[in-house]
Image (cartoon, rainbow, N blue to C red; front, side, top):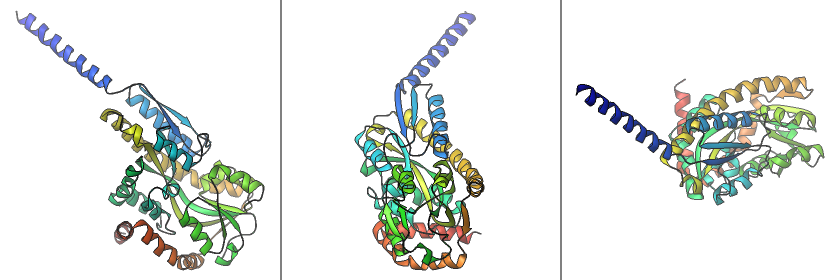
Length: 339
């Protein structure tokens, strides 16, 4: 009798596990997830998207399959954003700067010389104010998962080394389709030309523009060294990327599916930042080896540029909302006070 009771107990336990497994399996539906990005496959974006895909497929038991689609094959950042809003695409990663047309609060990350280093950037972006800014996207049809690192942006051009403020005069500089970038470089004396990233290499090659500004990694991965002579280490803006999801699609997911995506996004963020920072050091050395002339903007000239942009900063504060501006500035000050 004791054996019968034990057997019955074992069978009940097995049945319970079976039902639990079935319930868990039912939390995941077969889904093809299109993850679009702008850079080439062999880039920091491409590597991080592939890691994200592996994590999602593993955690969902293979039910959710992520298709990585790079090289701007699904369109520019703004085109992909519209596809996400309409539900025609599931996930993308792109610059926060291209989201300003949807959420003014995102413009706070475009503030020139906002962060002094990556420690400050990580703490603010991943902290309460970073989450608060990210949450503004939901009303526009997007769900922000995590911020990735694009890196500190630096100047390249074909005309001359930029060693002082006046050297920017008359340079046709491609900038992102973002008013803060356009207004900032106009204030610094450049002829700011807004263009989608997907059109940039051709514009440089044909001399439709003289220069551009992007992190070292992008200069290498997009082979801008083939069409640019000079690089100035200016670190004028810390430029985040953000992984966003279609809210229309997101609202159809189970809580288990959402959790898988969130966890994979966090793992991809940690991987991508480490990968990007290691690559940046290698990229600068490679830029020099490729023959580009590299100079570093002096602290005095950086200060001159910052002073020249005081009105731009005031405008950013006004457009993003004084509350967001004050919270970001307070978070940066608090970090600096702990040194």
